[in-house]
Length: 203
Ligand code: TYD
Image (cartoon, rainbow, N blue to C red):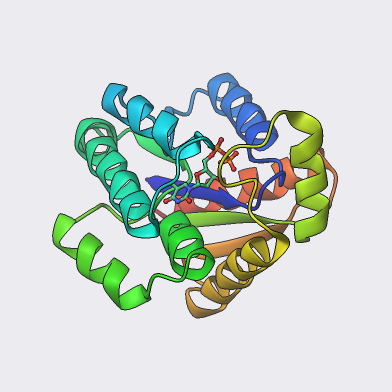
């Protein structure tokens, strides 16, 4: 099964991933944890460019770099794992591009479809979105470490991204589920773990 995890800045994706890793290991459920951008060696180089705030890039260039990263990621990591029946959980995936480059930077959904559809990327069967009011998330992100090129954007950019995700969940209720990440982290973990186990059992 292929799962993606999405979340606003500071919504607690990393904490949730750590708990899920421990849980799956303890229960001997095989899961490959991966992430975007930067899961492959070449993706690491693309990630450095993408997050470097001293580099100015056009939104379309940004999109192509992210899509290049995704194609390498899909071909080298996701598709081979799924072919071996290994479960995959990706920290960010295709919805991030529609959210950040689409809703955030203003590139049309149609244009993004045109770039991505010919690539035949595998689609997640479950997408979990950790939702947090933008201001709370940015406060958390600022505490953590220095801001990257995306985190430096203004609050409206992140509001557009959050609205996009919330809207996606309404449009795709079977794939896309929202978890309120203002709840405490144990509760967020419990809800996520149960959602994943339910999907695994349905298969
Ligand atoms: P990262 O340090 O991995 O942050 P996070 O914990 O928020 O996932 O940074 C990845 C950044 O890249 C994040 O701000 C979102 C952005 N991004 C896009 O804009 N589009 C995309 O398609 C992807 C995969 C990521």
